[in-house]
Length: 301
Image (cartoon, rainbow, N blue to C red; front, side):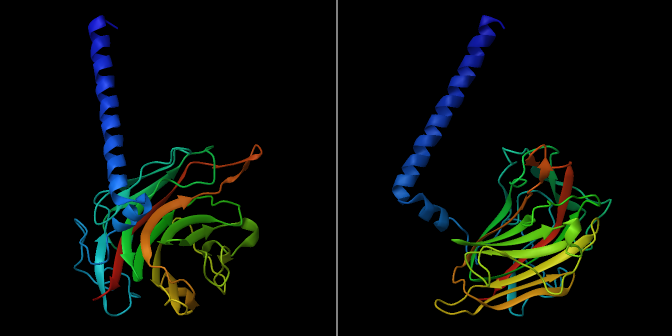
């Protein structure tokens, strides 16, 4: 490298370092001004009345293909993935540990039954460490009640973890509690190739999985419709609601939940717990899952 090129490279490096330092100072000043940074983060969560740039709000759940939306709801966002970010959805970036990532791809070879040809796709990397997700595509939202409908598809040769906990796919966050919709496929325990529910910090079995009864199985390689209706409980009461439909069949129907916390976030992450390979849990093979149209709505008023 010539001296001139070295000086230019050094100058560019110095500018980057100065820019990073300035950003740290600005962020620090903002945090001091706002007090607890967690409070600042909570204040930044859009409430249900705020508009989402680019979102389609013209269709009801039934018009968007999700007939179990409760009456009296209004659409916050219907998103067919014309881009990875938009319609209220944001992208956190690839998983720095596993290299797993999400992106928008052309799904016209096997399109979802409703929505556009583009889909959100998560990719797992063979041999990478297990136990964490494929990045995170998330939807900040502050609401006491929410309905979410989406289409999801697994590769025909998708291998879910043999861990009894399954693979957490969709998260509904009600800080400080969590609700996970997980996919589990263990050959010795079929026909439970299906979704189960985790409720962390509340529910009939806090911190443990809840299985649909009777058990059911969904085929790989096909699109499946998932609809979820959640309403927080009133303080001191057990009147919270969680209903989940898979392919138009209600699989869960709780009406006595004890979770008084409002929704603050929705996201697709896909935590994969892998299989034991060489004494360590790792992703067994490269594979994908996809998400088609996503519809989010809340009560009017």
